[in-house]
Amino acid sequence: MAVNHQIFLAGFGGQGILFAGKFLVYAGMLAGYEVSWMPSYGPEMRGGTCNCSVNISDEPVDSPIILHPTILTVMNLPSFDKFESATVPGGKVFIDASLIERAPVRTDVDNYAVPATGLARENEMTKLANMILVGKIIKETEMFDEELVKKALAKVCPPKKPELFDMNLKAIQLGMGL
Image (cartoon, rainbow, N blue to C red; front, side, top):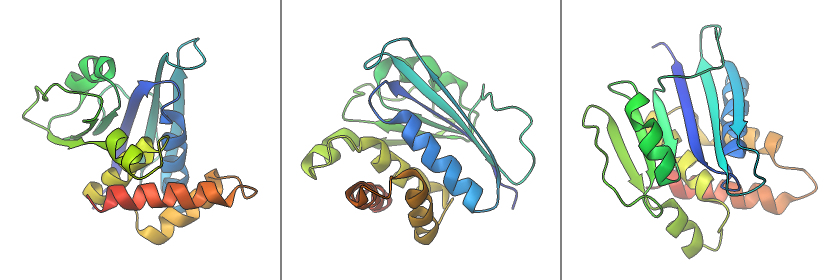
């Protein structure tokens, strides 16, 4: 089966959007796929707009720009309002339901309302709602197995801070368990 995931992650700066994209691209690379990662953010340091395009494919990636994602992940209402309509029919939309209260408009996509921010708070990992959503993406797409997840986390988490590896792994596992 051909692999062609065009993933678009969006939210506010400080929500870990770029880190989540970086993790996904490393996992794709370690799985032997062609990948691209293109971050985009507003001029603000925190709280401004932030999004990230990730391509994971078994074919060469023509462009890192994603206009019509197969997978959309949104962590705030402005991003949901802006990008929901761009998702391809049959695609998957992952919503942080703790921060986005409106129901999806689209019925031609698979919608996943994940209370990621609430789960992160409940599990004392307040800055890892992004990785809970990543875990849910991995579960619903069967994109990577847990061994590959660990290898990719080892690439994106600094070795001098092993607690970051452990907490990110716990957050991904929590998302995979939903």
